[in-house]
Length: 76
Image (cartoon, rainbow, N blue to C red):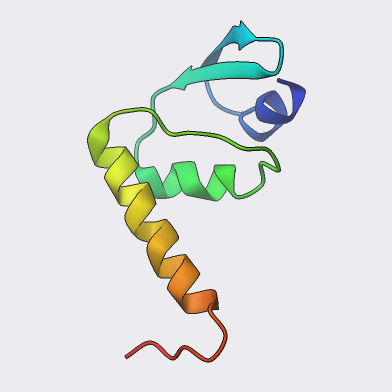
């Protein structure tokens, strides 16, 4: 939980322990872009649960980032 709290230290967030190695962070974001910028500094596994629009936007960004970093791949 300390790593997550550190990354989100400037945001209003509620932390809920959901297991010995799991924490749920509940927060409201103005944009999914803000969220991925902060999560880029988080060196632990995480899941964006909801809302679906944010999940889809994050998945699309992850796909584009993966494509951009693949060796030998040049974007059109």
